[in-house]
Structures are given as C-alpha cells and as structure tokens.
Amino acid sequence: MKKFLMFVLAGTLLLSACGAPMEGSMEAKDAWARTGMKDGNSAAYMMLANGAGQDDELVGASSDAANAVEVHLSQMGADGVMQMLQQESVAVPAGGMLELKPGSYHVMLIGLKQDLNVGDSITLTLHFKNNGELTLTVPVKDAADMGGSGMDGHTMP
Image (cartoon, rainbow, N blue to C red; front, side, top):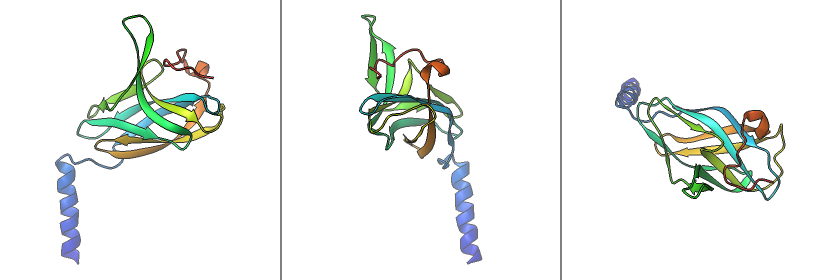
C-alpha cells in the first residue's frame, strides 16, 4: 500500500511539474455586480488572475440569479454606437490578468429572476477551458459607487 501511495504522489508531482492545470490556480478579485430589476439585465465585473503555468480561457459563466449568463465585450462601433459582442472565449494569459469592467469585457446576467439590490449577493460560476470552474459569491453594488458610468450597451432598468 505504501508503494502505491508513493507512486500516486510521485505521479501527481510529475504532472504538476509538467504544467498540468492545477485546481484553484484561477482567482477572482474585487468582484461585484450591478443592481437590476427582476426580468431585466445586470452585469458582473472582477479581476481574474491566472496563477497557472499555462494560458487559459474564460469560456462561459452560469448563475441561478438569471435566465441566461453570457460573456460579452462592449466596444464602440464604426458608426459611433456602443456594440455588444458575445464572446465564445476570452484569453487569460499564464501568470497574467484579465479585467472585466464596465465598457469592456463583462459577464452579462440576462433575465434576472429577482431584483438585485445594493447589499444583496449572487452566486456566479465561471467556466474555464483548462482550470475547470470557479464559483464566487458576488456582492451587488451601485455602479456609480464603483466608477461605472456606462451601461455596457444594454438597457438597464
């Protein structure tokens, strides 16, 4: 039995040294979500830090607070109108960071199942290509208090 456990331990260390994804190597900092009304939309923002030795991608998100959850990019179109582009994936470089913020990348919460008021919190799960899932408890804050002035191209109640 000792030899088997040593074999398993040695294999685990070898995989770690070869750059295999390590659970928990993706971290979210300063997460917050906008206020919103039931059946309306909201968005969540944060800083993602990839502590792994390999590049990764944010490939989606889910939450029981909304009917649909999508990763979006807000950008100005050639016509001067803010556009929303749903993203299939967003790169998070090895040892690097990805900022999800108003007017840029963000997690869109579509069809809220309840009002989101300042002081509430939601559960949000981020899905990564290599690092699996990261589940967060995200506080709801007033966008004006967070420096967010844009609506990310969506009509917010």
